[in-house]
Every structure is written in C-alpha cells, then in structure tokens.
Image 1 (cartoon, one colour):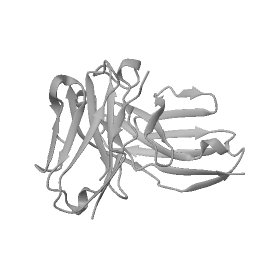
Image 2 (cartoon, one colour):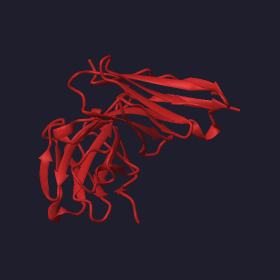
Image 3 (cartoon, chains in turn yellow, purple):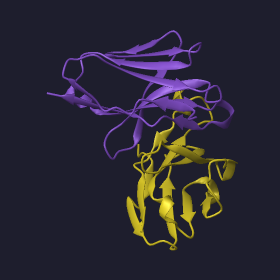
Image 4 (cartoon, one colour):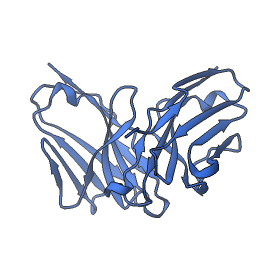
Length: 119
Length: 110
C-alpha cells in the first residue's frame, strides 16, 4: 500500500513568490493534516481536514496560507506571497479515523515532507 | 512555555549502552502521549505509545507519570541503528492534533 506522498520534495523560491505544495494521503484516509517545522523549532500543527472540510485550522500562521482539499482526496497548501520566515519543512499526514493515535485507525502516517526555502 | 519540552541533546552513547530520554508537558497539552522516531531528513514515525502503567516493546520502555507531568523513554542495549531524533508527542484529544517536542538527538557510536 502506498504511503503519504508529497510534491515537490524541495522548493526554492524568492520572497514574494507563490508556492503550492501538494499532499496525497493514503487511499481511504478521510483525515489529512498539515504540519511544519521551521528551523530550530518543533514540528507544529497547521490544520486538519476531514474529507473536504476544514476541521481545525487553528495552527495556520496567517492569511498568506491557504489550504484546500477539493473532493476530499489530495490537498494543496499555497503560500502567497512567501516570506523568509516561511522556510522550513512542511509535512502532511493522514489517518483513517479521528481517533487516538494509539489506535491503529487513529495513527497519523507522515509523508516525507516538502523542504521550502524562501530567499 | 512550550506544551511539550525535551532536552535536545545530542546524546552520544556507545553501542550496548542504556540511554534514557525525558520529556515534560504542560496541563493544556494532551490526553495521550507517544514517542516518535525521526531519521535524518525523513518523516516522523510512531515508535510507541506511552501509558501510566508503562509500555515495553523489546529494548524500548516508555513511561508516563501524570502527577509529575513527565514522560520517559528507555532504550536498552543501544544499536547503531537506534541513532535518530526521538520526538515526545502529545495528542490533543478533541482537536486531534499532535503536539511535538523539539526532539532529542541520539547518536550511538561503534
């Protein structure tokens, strides 16, 4: 079974440009999450989709970030315009159910991440 | 104050050593706790859940002390392949989000 995939693996852009990150969750997983790790900090939650609906977007840093999950399958995270402080690794994760991760159906499986560098 | 705090390390230990990682959490953090492992430039992967009664999986033992808001991970008989960053993680319950510590880097030396 294919895991969570993310595209691109790396992106280098200039300040002010737009970047769109894509995440394909594990097939059949209704729950999709975005997290990011900026340099020297811990991985932080950005938002959570259940199918196509935003369940929790409390971690989105500001309105330059827009996440979508049309059709409830893959998701995109757009940063427009990008700023220097947006540099970091953006992880996507998916889970079958909205359950504790101690349960198999609640385990959040992470993708390999997109490394974003804003110059 | 961070919701989940860890000593960032690095911990440099010889093969065969026993190493312990600690983590503390704030009241608001979580209902459940986990240890994740992250290899260099890879994604985090669930290592094990942490229970008050303790949880053992081979050479790994995890423990939760709710009274002290303290979580531990013990690795016995360290292997070279154990070298990685170990992330202490809380689960937010109703919010369903994972709350990560900064991670502790372990380097097992031959």
